[in-house]
Length: 548
Image 1 (cartoon, rainbow, N blue to C red):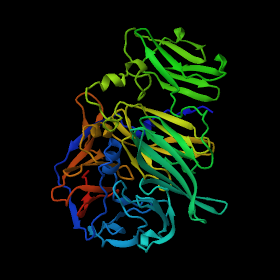
Image 2: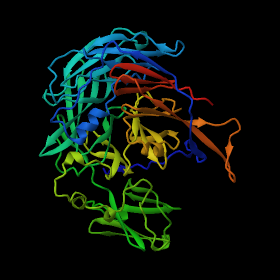
Image 3: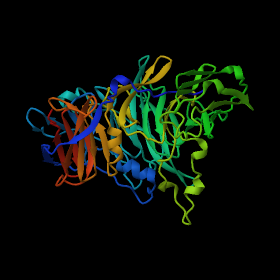
Image 4: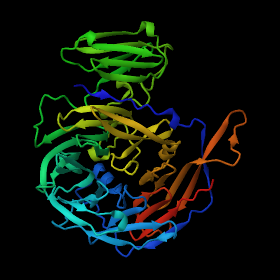
């Protein structure tokens, strides 16, 4: 079965065309600061972890973990491996006493090359903790609104090699015929043949036997910006800049004849007069297997039951002169431009550049001194968001993101569902929720942060980016200097109107200085009313009281 191309079409009801930017407010933001009695645990890169992938994984890790099933509770782990509970009382205007709920078991000595501890909440009463070395603890948290002591359910060795280490990216609880399994998605960086790779290890833990029952592995030679399990744990959703493929499965061996899971469905080229779209070869394909349709500027190409290209073209074409044919098993569509000589920067909105316009890698990196693979980012990559099936090892659905990598992920948007992913849509930031329905997988547009993608592009020193669960405001946090708060729904009493035009809407920006914050920011939780920051010495609450 061929991969289905997903078109990310934003809901127009969730977009505001009259949004006119953010107005800077000089009103101070109230900050409540409390010194920590227990220092947060934090692992730094070793000398062997020098790649760009390592730097990204360590620097962006959030050490203040929000519980999506409660509205006001977050956790961090201190240097004694004690899980600490953090709550801010809105009515009292201060932090509640920081309590201890669980001590993580140390099963192996932490060495250089290991990673930080991580927590993922999988339900209202269960959590999974990764020790960053080789072990996973499954914990019964009880009713977390009552601050009960947590109890260990299982302590499982997740990976055989203690030298490798891992970061826990996602976890889900699945119950089938009274059999309870915990699916976990682990990530590590590995050097193979002189090249660093991002490695995702997908394991299933049988709670009755308290051991790993299934082990799968995916690899990519790029950053994996987003990785979650589907809501039924039948697949994994990944956003990356280069090919991702299965390399190991303990239950179903990888079949060699499966095509490259990141093989492009088509490429395109242009001249002054026309556009030529070439689809990849398909065995035993006939011209009658393809259907080409046009509705306005939208093009749709279908191979048998699968849509292989769909979207609104960059510009108008002469439909009467459009032709298509099958040549050496490759299907080609030739579009004639309505405006001769017009250069198309892309075929579809947010799509890849044309094949010939992309510079050759040897031309970019032609310096005398060799540039290591770790120094090359994914800024020029063709980013994509895709679902991979655990049974067939194939990419089943794919959304092309062009040169724009995902902006951030929001686990707390819909508890129990995969984390929402924030993607650029023109100047806006749209949040999409992956949903698994019987026989189908979709991405649903849940909300929009107006002009936030444009704002984010100018913040080069950002470390953490997130928004409130109700999408009322967004936050950009630097490592040490500033926090920027953006709220889109802010208007004057009478509204504003351009000299000749309709009424416009303004948002509000606030800037918070982090002087005397107690060291570098190593964690952030964005709630509907306040934003919490974890530093090396303190916990801070920013009162997001933006006047209307």
